[in-house]
Length: 410
Image (tube, rainbow, N blue to C red; front, top):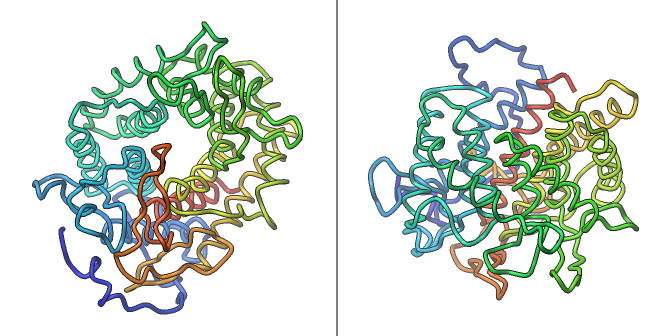
């Protein structure tokens, strides 16, 4: 899988997006045939194409070893990226999560093997084990591996969950009123660590600790003016970091929905309703999630969409408020997906998604301008954000989410 035309900017012929109505994905055995005009079929086709683009452009063996694969973080790539000298742990966790989406949507032996290969390769490249110093990273991997563990025969994912669960559970700091820090030894406690950690722990049956995390976020990080979730807080000083990031809203919606499903506490339904209203009011334009960037930020809107889809299909309750919330979440997913698809480029027959779904995607002109690390250990955007694996993973998440809500009849 190494080399080839995908890494050569001289071979990148492209055109304006054609109609995709004739793209009929192969069905797995026993999969029900849907009419070609059915929305769920259409989004499944588009998700197939998003998956194929990631596989052909980004998946490469780790250090040329057989039976390994991870996502090269840029396309076209530079040497250090192709040889995985550049390592973005949490991007690869989302790659596993997207591969699980595809394997659940249209199960095949190839997809199941791909999930297993990605899981095995993540452990190999991380060198020191499954864990690292960043609690947000570990939470994302725990979420992906818990889902991967449900796929038949994925024993390695099951074995990884113990160490990750222990790290996330014991990171809770009651001495300062709760919260999980961003990384080991840090004084910064933020939504990007506590939100996914809560989701992971809830899915592992640790509902009490997950509920503590949800309450801590609501009490500590909710902006009283907008209703949105702030980035984080330095403790014990109490200094807030006030940027609003779309993925902070997503993980809180996901956590509260998980708890609404598994507990009888109506506070979780109320928090979903309040935050969903704030997201619609402040983070969308005509139903489309706005903005976007590359680097780490390339994943932010995709994560919001993933958990909006979860709200749409999982939020319990048949009162008017819950029915309206499910419809609102589904509408944002579908409108965002339609905009991103309309504004994509087709490069050698495969979609390239824009970093901002409301404007036309840009074609990376070469392998230069790769993103780097900031002083806060965040990954900065490539010069053309569409080059970044993070941006393309968000596009894939979006297509899978659109399929999920339309397949549910929403």
